Image (cartoon, rainbow, N blue to C red):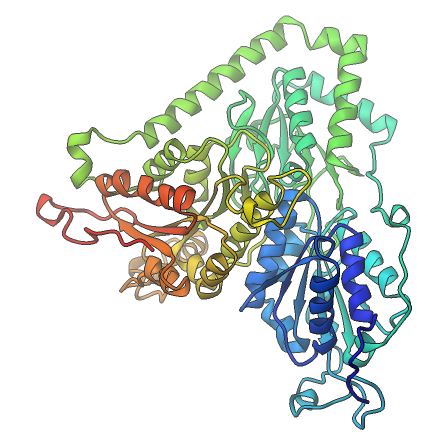
Length: 623
């Protein structure tokens, strides 16, 4: 064993080359004693391959690292990489692995293993006490059930093949996280430089509906009186959104429900839109034909379910939901197919088949189009009314509610803002008012591991800035040149997001985002769950403190962020409409013009008297 002074080509260096050659541009790292060769390779790459080597982003917390890679990949559909430290770093990924899996985010995770030699047999043998403590029987089992693929890098000479195989799994349907691991000895191995033909390592192509299914589904949709399309993940592909719009334009009676599984899937300004709802919607009960596409939870049977006479078709890239032990819906047919391909096939058949074309132009369908338009307008009027601010004379004494807050956010922020949403119980109110109409402008967690949106928003902003030039560039001139990014997060979820790490990374790498913290004094989701099961139980009669879900007294959420950013963060709070109207534009200005993060805590629903107005949080500090 022993160090070498010469510049060597090791497994680790080939690993980074493989990432870059496969299109991975950013690596989010949390390094440890298993990474000497990784660190050497980083320095060598940054010195020798400027502009052709992944950018390294230091992340003090592993969950934030993976959430950043998740957000970056979600916006671009290009996989990114996370490097963590043996078993403990793998455990530190926490709920982010669940989110990437459920949210179908293509990410590659690499973790080292404790060295397997003790006496200096190879470079990389054990040199520290911790190498015994972190040697576990089967490290991959910590995350294997969430991953599309796990594999060990045992030798250097096929490391690029292993990386590309893992990326094929990560990017092929259904996409998701993959996990590679390797000992120090394997990663230190010196090998001859080599390259692969990247064209031979593409992801699996999309699947299509069989011809009889296209005909059958098309005929049912065209003949239905109340057809319904339910989507959840189709917005991952912008083309799928446009194809779904074309389908709704072709079928006058069709309505579309976005179940919020991931990205915005259908524009809120289309007359077919029913907005975003989690498994409960009256049109589910009244639909006679339902097409479920790329959706994990189309409805919650104990709360809402289709008519027994409804004809249901299920199309999904993961139609059997192979990672869900219990899943079933009463579909009369199921198909494993890509959403864009499916919508395109249906559109083509519906617009070229003379019988169906004639049917869709009859008087009944003309009336259905007008009825759909009227229903949509009624819903929009209700949403607008809920979000309307009171007269200016009442601003000082009017508390903020989720609808007026989201409405004002939408009116104040740039029209092409990208929203990273983790509002939990308030999601419906927020989605109604933000009313996203463009693909990739509204992204939520996709899973149930709270805390995604902190790192997720950073990853989204980093990706937007990186791709703001053509070709994409790491140049500092790109800082804050991408789209405006706004994180909207509940108070409890903000704490889950590890803000100490999020806002340190933001200031270290100049990634300015706006964060809106919805302070409703604690976790309201558990109370809602309690009341769904025990509506008249003992818990229904006590407050949140008694239920142990209260955050009173409230932390200084904005202050936490500012401290983590070393003072380079605009920090403010509001609890009246007057304060909101004054402080939100200042927060936006800090992000756009000063290039720093801004955190605005919004205290929801506090009753105020005229004498209490402006007594708290009069000043707004900025970095």
